[in-house]
Length: 304
Image 1 (cartoon, rainbow, N blue to C red):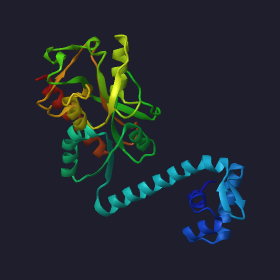
Image 2 (image 1 turned 120 degrees about the horizontal axis):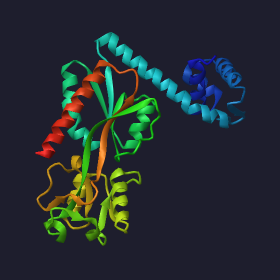
Image 3 (image 1 turned 135 degrees about the vertical axis):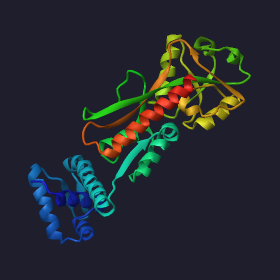
Image 4 (image 1 turned 60 degrees about the horizontal axis):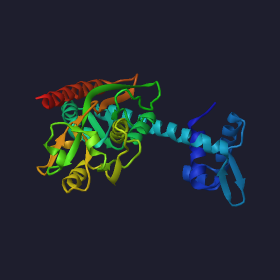
């Protein structure tokens, strides 16, 4: 039967590089470390560690087990911290992940309401892959995420994504651009333009742009990459390139650029909340209700 101390020993050996050093770090004797390692290897019926005169190294089986051991130990650490906080202070910590534009516009009212109710919120800002990893490891209780409409995020069936709003993708042009006078700009008129795009290949805005341009028979050429929408707007205004920008990321547009919808199929990204299907606390329900209300307020403001 697996025990937590077996996993602690494996992690210590991997970190320290020898059984003796692992024993010192755990305040065990070396025979105790050897005993727990033997029990772990017996459980899997395979060697987990190469022992040598210059120390130890994990075998392929040990390397495969290590990330799972670390994840289990991290979950235990988080559980202890949450339960102790509940016992000592009568409240828990809700760990929420977000990407920048959602964090700025969707989350503040929800977090404010939770604070007033006595709940504590820990916010983590990151890119989408990091947020999904945080959900899988349970470092996050929930996360604001985005995707293209109709696209499924790479999450296991134990998670669910609740949609909040559809975030339109709009064209940002310098104020003196020849197409700036149009109410809707056809992509075909932009085939010779340079584009300011995101820094990663999985960016849903760039994928939507690539798909739309392909319908017109061309591929967008990037002249710059950034994920900072304030930086992007500055370089668009300076005439360095044009860009497709989510409405949430625009804020108050600069006076020296214009924002127009693209003439053609509507382009957007779907904003939602990803979380495990089970185990929701009252704090999660309160946060979800306020996020839905804030999303409705934002959508109504766009329509007005």
